[in-house]
Image (cartoon, rainbow, N blue to C red):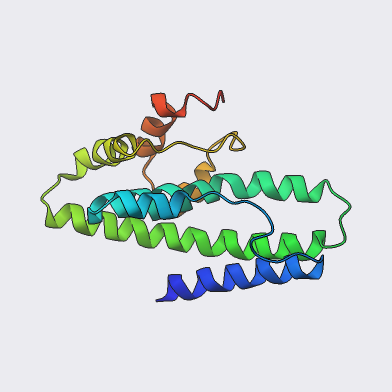
Length: 168
């Protein structure tokens, strides 16, 4: 419930910024990754791997990139947008962390040994053709570790073929 409340808060804050410059939700195209993942994934462990440990974790990587782009602009909402991005970033760390807790809980229930979990996670991502956005130039290792990723998982992700879109 806390995550859902915070996600609604993120939407409302971003929508308020859009309205302040004369736009509304729906005026710009957005990706449908979350909807598509939920439509194609009926396995709880896979959903946890894809949503909090996949999509939301990518948000940890992309947020600094977005902040740098906004910081370089002279737009009137720059200061407010950076504040909203910071709130989202801090709360996404908590969302990913909760996803990690659930991922390991389900792994425990399915008797998946700890030493196999990084491999299981990577296989789930590959199974659903998960990929990282082109804008993402690097993992935010510090945020991912803070959210509960292991160094082994980060190494496996960096070395994976599905990251080939991102040269760095």
